[in-house]
Amino acid sequence: MFPELFSVAGKTALITGGTSGIGLMIAEGYLRAGVRVYISSRKTDACRTAQETLSQFGEVHAIPADVSTEDGCRGLIDEITAREDRLHILVNNAGATWGAPFETFPGAAFDKVLTLNVKSPFILTQLAHSLLTAAATEDDPARVINIGSIDGIIVPRLGTFSYSASKAALHQLTRHLAHQLAPDILVNAIAPGPFPSKMMAATLEAVGDRLAASTPVQRIGRTEDAAAAAVYLASRAANFVTGAVIPLDGGLSTTVGLQT
Image 1 (tube, rainbow, N blue to C red):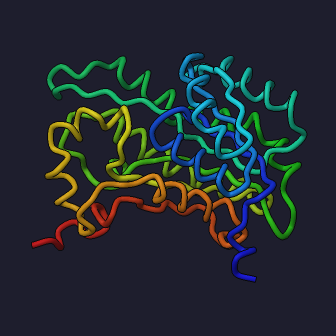
Image 2 (tube, helix red, strand yellow):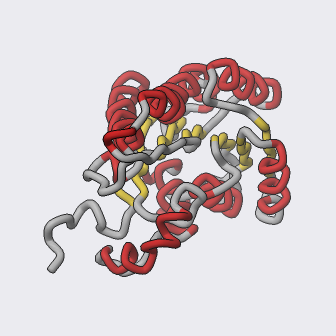
């Protein structure tokens, strides 16, 4: 009984921003667990490289798409619809950040970051609704998993004002969609802390050791951490979970103020 509860074998997933970082980690985890995976990214070369890397683990297809625009979102879902009659899992992972001092932080940073980090997950979920509904059963609803951040839970020390605001907004959007789309579709969010990724590369290079030491578990995230959380939320084991924002940060946000 219990192994079956955590099985996602035979499902189909779409992961935006699935060619690098946490998206790539989740894609690998799903493939190893028997999921047919579609990944997307703006860059054709990145799609090709990621597909070649991931193909050793299972059936993976890469679709270049710019999901920062409504046309790009629509084109991606149209492509999935042409290939599949149902979609069990949508992982809204594509995102952007912007860092600058408060005094010079540009208004354009809010337009760019909130569009990709908040508006696009909504549009993609809206467009994929019929595919997700087609995959849902009473015993196993379809899933939407939004990739938020602990920066939407605690206050970051860097000048990433639009990023932290966007992730807090995505967490609230997750709750709102969870209410709207249940019981056929369960909507949850993962709020990662420090993981190796392009977005975190400069930070990890500068203060990676100090950042790892600041977490109760004394390390940064690994591929299996991201994969396990995503597999759990996509499995029947999480059938009674919706509207949740799960911190995946080694205790960095959940034990703030408790460290000595």
